Image (cartoon, rainbow, N blue to C red; front, side, top):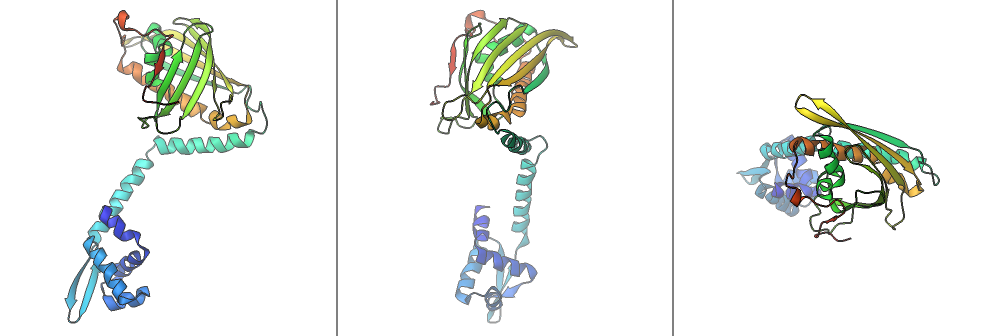
Length: 300
């Protein structure tokens, strides 16, 4: 495939392929129609033949070239598969386009400081597992790190002190940035405000701008309610996400809240569904929720 793409990348060779698609032709005619010298045309045709795109034979004193269609059909099929992958319903490209539409709208709205103050978002998920298990996933860094990022991202640094006044640090990178060589995708800092184990968790969290300033402040209130399901006990999680202190530069962050936080909660639901019982039944191995989870491969 690489040889095929290299052969077709040259405009002069592409012109010859187009002419041969109409009918087999001799070198002299191809050179005239392509408005090129015959020696150059011969070299291009030889390159196409080595790539398997054309075939030739002698007829008297002339050499006639013809197009081989199978490689082109294989290329077309490969390109079609790439397009289908990118266009899959609900896939990353669709999410990218949705974010782009929201980004344009938010940037137009962000005219002055405070432009988004009072905006709120509500999220609800019915989760597998008792409230105490869900609570652990909301407050323990080792479990938070499994889900607390949108798709295609990974937690690279995490501090969550699950007590009133406790500190929060949340940093994340691209999931494929294994060595921390790319720029940080996002970082936020905040404070825990209310802790009612198994029932309610409230905190404020502020994403940081590239220069270190606060983009806005998010006030999150998470409520947990036990429910009965066919498989046993479950938990209804309701999240109220409210914005204050919005800066003009916060538009890019606010545009991604509905998609990004929704994806994070979907990952939480999937994590709990895969581990409906206590993922770490030995209390001696549990992480203190006030400890720091840091990806040692990352740099800040």
